[in-house]
Length: 143
Image 1: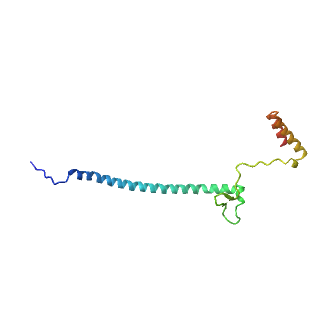
Image 2: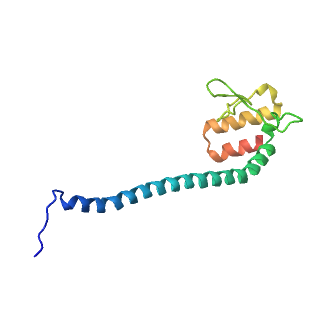
Image 3: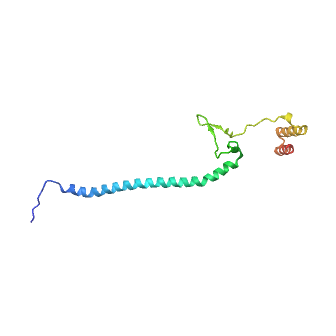
């Protein structure tokens, strides 16, 4: 029978290293692979975003030049549109559009006598609450 020689080092340390070393190598390779995948995904996303922007730009450009409000800021002889913003980022030029129009009272003096008579009859029908149909008929005759 062979005698076992004990040299003082436990055998399980070597076995543990043989198991953990491939695990460590796989973890490092996986981390590098994930890093490369992330970089590749970011690059592909940037290319796709640029392609979409290139596709949409002519459509937006045509919409801008078809809208008459933007022609006032077009500088003749140049290919640029411009705007100006204040220190807090508020639009200065062109002036911003109001989201809700401000009503202006009707100047009765500017109406002809017939228009004035029709307007007052429409208002009376509306205020007297003779019904919506009566007020609408009066409004229709005015316009």
